[in-house]
Image: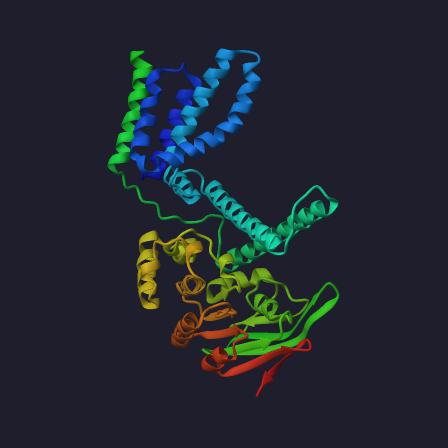
Length: 213
Length: 217
């Protein structure tokens, strides 16, 4: 799929449908369509979903003690939504979601806050990666000693200070560039064949569930 | 010569330490001034004070002969002063090059169509049209500096305050920036370590040393 706004919309509709209605076999159709469109990434998508399932299985196990059937149903529902969403957003960056929200006319303040939060998360992730590499390069081996805990404590303190400095510099940029509380995005509304196909699949499932079954 | 920016006895004290005191500087119309100095001597802080981002401990600034009483006074002249930070990754406020370049225009109420037309011309002039759709954070250091400069130039500011514009750049990128800055006819204050860069660009050089700003003859 190409259109970010449509991606968000179909995800919302499909997730609500799968989460709040009784399970049907044809719920798999939109998943198959998206997987067909992203067939080149199929293995990677499945790997990601399997990885995420380790956490979900733990959750489902708690339910399984009370009701086996409900646990299985929960597992299927979660996996349907997860597989659909992962396949749909596999090639997306966080910024695509922001563009999607912008096209859907979500509040500019929300979009701006979302954008800068995403920026800061990216910055902190990069910082953490750099710090880890520095520790490795300097021969640090993590174990259960007090020294290790102190080192990690220092590392997080440093990250906190850097994040604070970064946000201060960003504030200066905002002031000097005339920031007025929102960012301005150029969003395109191009709709490709794949977008139509996924929308039709989801819409068909909604209609069948609502009017036929 | 009419002055664009005047520093009147600017003093900055941080945690009881005097960073610089009684700094006096006059930036003339289309004059290019360089400020050099050791690491941590307060060059960047001085530039931030000139940009109206930090309040000086004492003294005041005049922009086009208008006294700036406080940081809010700078608001009127925000579009006339372009400030480029040392780390340009903090300068970007939008994800793609074109979006970031037109940001200031859009924030000033210019329509998207008009802003885009203006940006197209500027990007063409700067030779970075091919970067238009790229994400700013994926660009090389040199490309980021030029894009950041484009973001400033789109507003046609009368004064440019550039903090280490050639910092961490390779020779080729440095030459590109020098050529670009040489072609711009604006009042400029440049903070830099590169002496060859300063010599090729500015007529007057000041050194921030022992808490004061001294002209190098």
